[in-house]
Length: 454
Image (cartoon, rainbow, N blue to C red; front, side):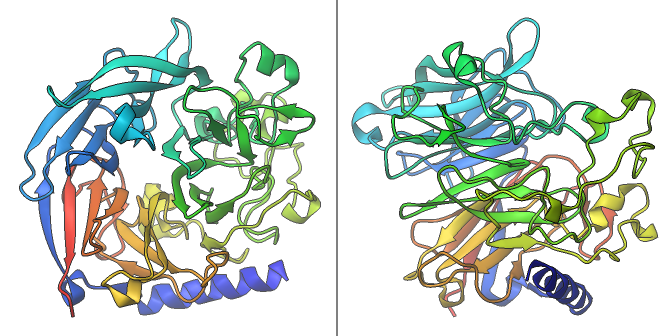
């Protein structure tokens, strides 16, 4: 079943790429640049002041931005944030469910404990008189951190619990190839007692508003911890639709994923990318390679090391994705010469960075009951229609708003008429002709696409 599904989706993608599937913004939407010059904007929510609240990953600031004219004012600038070229710094933010009474705001960022990089979640209080965030309080500290695959999305659920996405730090690839990938490792009772969170990589965490372990968190291998789900690579998007939690995560050279996240669920990484179909991906444990550091990262299969097919990993707790972007057949060309040294831009992945939901009663009829996903690699949005019960993805994936930018987050206005998008200030992306580019059209920007109402 998985093999058939994989081959069909791969062949359909090849056909789609050749025919083109993007919908022009000029057809249904007007577009404008609301604001430029942000220092690596990362997260965006609707603030209580009716403005867009935006974090700067490298700038270590949270801004309140007027969505009409782009005027901004600083809510807070956080000292001692460790920043880097891509994954470190100030990342996600969210408001407490009882914000009207508590005025609590949650942020997460990378810091140094004097020896190692760490990740923490911090709670601030919004002061309406000064329109600033004050009184920081650490909620959860000492989380593992690094220069790759941090995850970093924060969101409250309808259960009043805080959910946090944590990547596996890019272990088992590139410069981190010799470090063991621990997306499948679960914390022991001793580690939980000692507040040793080293196993919290490649996981979705669930915690109380005070940072504690909820009493109804899943018991995994006999231990209750902050871990809600496991087996993730780089989960950068979380979204609640009703009581269901959805997430997007970035795959390797194939199979970015849209997942329905369920308590105790195992999403397969690093043994499975997408479906367990043995198509275009097999796990190679670099940390077990003798003399790993001296073996070039470009080596497809290091001497003396076997790859493990996806179908050889059999777990009853495995959850397959709702949709992949995209599952490709093994004969797919991952080294297309036209992409040169940036070959990865030619892979059949989109690097999903966030997601939002377009409701069944929204004014854009074609978008109703769809998940909207932002892409870093293609500078576009992808619309995924859902079944009526929202348990399955249905219909074709439609691509919108392709520009020469890296889309970091998408956020839909409350009236459903405007789609706001944050862009990275730098990076590699596919341009309007599908070729690699390192020059962003709108670096560090807030873009707005407004529906014409037809």
